Structure formats: structure tokens, C-alpha cells
Image 1 (spheres, one colour):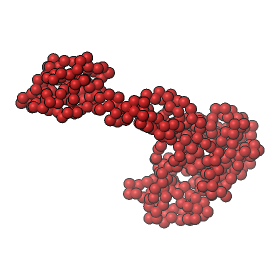
Image 2: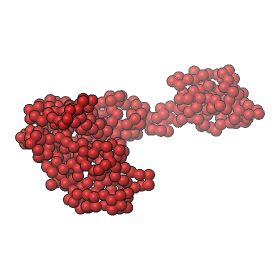
Image 3: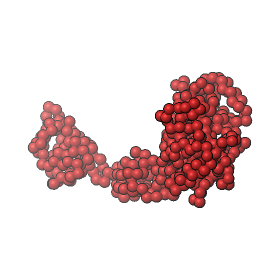
Image 4: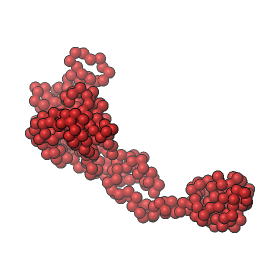
Amino acid sequence: MLGVDDYLDRVLALVQPLAAIDLPLSSAQGCVLAQDVTAPWPLPSFDNSSMDGYAVLAADVAAATEAAPVVLEVIDDVPAGYRASEALRPGTAIRIMTGAPMPEGADAVVPVERTDAGTETVRVTSPVDTGAYIRRAAEDVVAGEVVLTAGTLIGARQVAILAAVGCGHVTAHPQPRVAVISTGSELVEPGTPLRHGLISDSNSYLLVAACREAGAEAYRVGPVVDDDQAFLSAVEDQLHRCDLILTSGGVSMGAYDTVKAVLSQLGSVDFVKVAMNPGMPQGCGTVGDQGIPIITLPGNPVSSYISFENFVRPAIRRMRGLTDLHRPQRRARSATSIASPPGKRQFARAALLPTGEVRLVGTGQGSHVLGGLAVADALVVIPEGVSEVAAGDEVTVIDLTSAD
């Protein structure tokens, strides 16, 4: 059997960051920058007011009090997006809105709350310091400054700075397109009444959702019966529209394990046993003239998910152009004892407790127990050489709640 890390190396060797393309900013969220972005202008690009109020000379209102307000003539009104029509003169004020350019001659802003909000004259009831409530040009970003570096994941906050410096398009690695195929004649679509011996296809929905959480554009093909030609046709249909094919089921040693039977004949997909629990049967390689990577996962739903977390999620993140491929790990104390099969790395479904402990969830650790997986927020990793963890022992925990 291959070790988990050795098999991961095989999977990662199949994929590279997708070639960078030019993307409109509206489509860039979730993608990874391929080039540094520099600001063509400063932020702010001009001195502007940080408050609704009145642009003044600070010296003119230095003596203002509630009891003895300073009265100034209001000579102009400046909304955001407009400029004052004249310069400020001593003894006058210009009404100004938040974000509007500072008028020439003004050196401070009095917030409207410190005035009577007059329109022809204004009564100022407290002084302000020179420079008060003014956002200075370039105090945030200097022209020519690198605002985002290559390798940055574009989220909402990054979209904001890109828009602010005028990037209508960016050069970025696109999100991988992943086709998900479930195999098995026993599978039916969710919502279909079940006859004896049939099961509702949960794997394809699970894997599509997991791919999307990992930052891919994923779509499900639908269940494929255990027929060599049907499976081969399903794979061939996806070659022109995806960057990665993901299958579940049909990779064990059974008489009807179609995925293994078909792809083994192509000579470009290797099937191995990996020293892990759950998820021992695995396969990966390439298909088609373009060498599209394909990763084949076991059919039991928990095995499929654990395999995804260990092998597919890192591959998707590499294709996105990210260098941090794995979820964060932490140490926690086990609330209970945990048995582990010798010679295999176990990934036990668990919940992190407010006490800092971790406890197993569900009715057992079988590869079919979806109820426990649904409430798990962590995986306890038990190394190959450990057959039992005692209550109170420290263990390594993968945090399943972490996002990009």
C-alpha cells in the first residue's frame, strides 16, 4: 500500500495552476491574481471631507463656543462629485458633503453636528484643529504602489481595492471546472421513490458542494450505470468542458467495478491501495488527448469525502494558483479513547468542543455513516503507527470549518 503523503504527491503531480487569463472584475471573485496590481493614482486622489459639514479656516472658528457661536457666511454648497465654484475667503464657510473635494483656501471641516446647519449663514459652536475631518490625498495608497501581489486570492475586500484603482479587468488564474460523475446501477436521483436495493445518489451532490467550497466551478453529470460503454461515454463527453474529472465508486475489487475496469485499459490511470481509513482504494491519472486529470474516489460516501479532503481539495487549490494547499491543523485533547487500525492513517469524524477538547461524533466510524459526517466539524488524524488514542491524549485535528 502507498502512504497517504506518497499518493498525494502522485495526485499533485497531475495538476498545475491553470493558465492565467484576462477576466472582467465582475468575474474575478474566487480567482487568484497572476500579476501584481499597482495603483495608477493615489487613494484618495484628492483632499476631501470625511464629514458632512462646513469647510472653514480653523482660525476663524477658534473662539467658537455654545454660548458665543461664530457666525460665518455660507458662500457655496459642494455635494460629493462636485467642486466648489469659488475659493474660501476668511470669515466665510462652504457647506460640504462627505467625500466632496476640499475647496481652495479651506484648512478644516466643522461637522454639521457642531453647527445650526444654516444655509445662508452658519453658527459654529465649537472650534476645530487645522486639518480636522480632512482625508488627505494619498494617505491610503500612493500612486505606483503595489496594492495586491500575484498569488492573492480575490475576495470581496480585494475586489474593492481593485475597483478603487480602476482595474476593470485583471490577469488571474480562473477557477477550475470540475465534472463530477457518480457510478453505480443502484443509484437514483434524490427525490425518486426507492425500490428495495436502490439508494439515493448523495456522492455527486457531496462532491460538487465540496468542489465549490474548495473554489472550483463544479457540475454533476448524474449517476452512470455499471456499464463499461456508458461510463466511457460519460467521461468522453466531459473532456472538452472541464479541467478535472472526479468520479466516485467502481474502484474496488468487485466484479462490477466499472471505473477501474474501463480506465485500467486506457493505461493512463493507476489504481492503488492507500494506507488510510476510510478511503483505501484510490486511482488517478489522465484521460483524453489533452491529458485531462482524473481522480477516482471510492463509493462509500464518507470514504469519498475523506479522500476528497486529502487529495482532491489540495489539487483544486494548486490548479487555482494557490500555494497553501491544506486546511489548518491544530492540537487538541481527545475526550474519549479512539481505536485505530494498525498500519493505516485514520481520519475520524469529530466535533471541536469549547473546552479545547475533541470528541467523536455519530454512531460509529464506518465509511457509510453520513449522519456523523453531517455534524462533524473536524477530523482527528491518527498516525499509521498508533493503534489506540487514550482519553486525554493530544491529537492532531483538521479544522473542516476553515475557508479560503
